[in-house]
Amino acid sequence: MSTPFVVAVPSKGRLQENAESFFARAGLSLSKAGGARDYRGTIAGVDNVEIAYLSASEIAANLARGAVHLGVTGEDLVRESIPDPDKRVLMIEGLGFGYANVVVAVPQAGSTSAPWPISTTSRAASASSTITACGLRPSTST
Image (tube, rainbow, N blue to C red; front, side):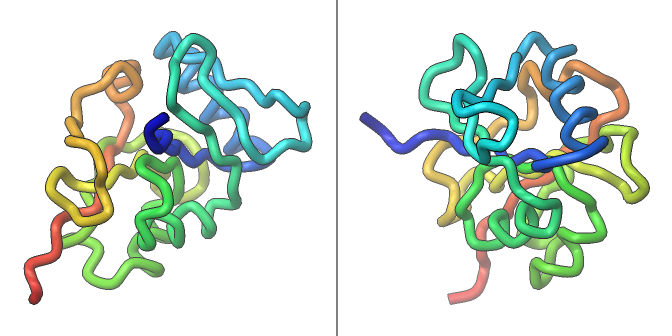
């Protein structure tokens, strides 16, 4: 079995509800096998994808480490926690909810932290015209 594609979404409150609604509008139903207090989940009918329910700041930190492949978090947190974010992160699309600019974040294609080729065109990204996408860019330093 290959390593799962990890999608990080906020773990509680209105941001979690809005993120789940966003994915639902794209035809992707998030579920937690262990119930509401579980911090891991799946997307119904989609194999090898794991949902990680984390705090918004943990999502940004995990993107920086390459521990998640796509994350819904505040752009402000991405910019505060990832050095040179404009070189390492691709903002996909603003989602239009939350008090900060909330974004979907994915590692950039070719990034050492991206085990899969990444495309900014996806079912989730095309679900709403108010989405902002974000992904880690490949390092240019040696």
